[in-house]
Amino acid sequence: MKLSLVIPCYNEARNIPLVLKRFAAVLTRKDVELILVNNGSKDDSARVLAEQTPQFPFAKVVTVDVNQGYGFGILSGLQEAQGEFLSWTHADLQTDPRDALRALEVIESSSRPERTFVKGLRKNRPVRDTFFTVGMSIFETLYLRTVLWDINAQPNIFPRSLFAEWQNPPKDFSLDLYALYMAKKQGLDIVRLPVVFPERIHGQSSWDTDLRAKWKFIDRTLRYSIRLKRELL
Image (cartoon, rainbow, N blue to C red; front, side):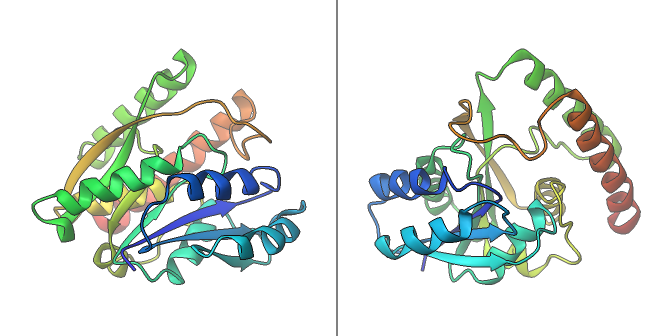
């Protein structure tokens, strides 16, 4: 298996069939697996996954009984991954599954794929979201003393060896920060892949619901940054 793409699903029952169909429409190779993680969903995600995934031989399901965070869902999927390269993205269809396959082509064509980390770079975003991203990027860059830009962009793809080096990774949305920082710390080549993030088709973000929720996200990220600096710098 060349690539394992993990998609954590929390209350994404309406999006799951669309994810599977869209991925099937763009997948042209047999060495890619899609790992859908039912991340403690409280809607019909479990039923939809059980009904839908048998129709798609490239897909398998990992179940987390109780939601312990976005990062925990991804880590649960990565533990079951068989690919030479590991990846994750979102289930809300704001990231085209084609982007993960484009990222795979980029990493395979690099001069040293075993030392390359490919990450999305979001384009054409609303001004409010861009302002938020710029502010967080500047803070993390200055605080952790390494360039960390558009930290939560998707997809992420990297060699299995990077995952093997992780120790006590965060279980929440800080996992994106941790992965990018660790790739930088270990001297991997960082390649940014331009991607477009459209609006969600179904459902609502589990964190970006209003300004208060965004500030809670900022607070959690800042607290984790302090811990990360204390542990790793």
